[in-house]
Image 1 (tube, rainbow, N blue to C red):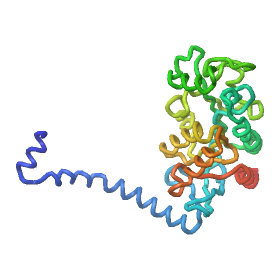
Image 2: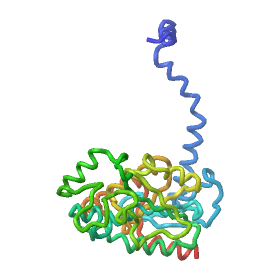
Image 3: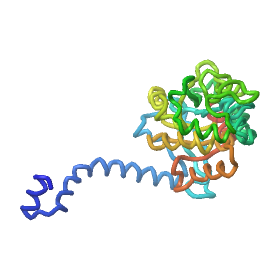
Length: 298
């Protein structure tokens, strides 16, 4: 028992009184709860998560309003407001390795159509937002040529599921070493390739906040809202979305702009986002997003 605690006990004040210091936090707590109460009442009236100007300041771009589904309860419809100039479209790992022939997913023996299905919706979204002030960030998962940033267990598992050919090796008929930076199969698929002015970020893991500079990119670009697309829904996309949500970014996933190697995993990943009124963010689709862009930004 520390000297200060012993003194209080000896004086008969009791351990419960040690909690009195919490009054120091009351004002900050009450301010935040008051903001949340106001926003909750507004949501009841408008079914809209309004852009929080008290937190981010007035919009510097155009206020974009996107319809999201199953929010706050399944079967409900709501809207999210975002400042176009503070919004990023994050295209996660749309690489040949994950959605193209002779890449990693193809070599592992999975149904390539389940991830490649995201290519056209993502391309349509990119075409819609190019020329607007929405920022576009592409990520690529991959490892250094010497595999120094590739965990042994990750390499081992890939070798086993790939029937002897895994990360760092070239499959039969392959384009290069799987998930290795600089290889043709590691690069972004030609259908959704970056254009001048867009950002490309390389990461070594499923997530991006711990294995890349994504958080620095987002902060330097003043991003508050993120539109998620890419593959795979249940792994890299979900991991980054959870990370971003924990950092306070407003996250929206376009469900047809993502894909997974297993349909059941894809559906579960989409549903889990919607739990608790949007525990990791919200879900929409490319049609709603493109319609909102064309109506409000063009």
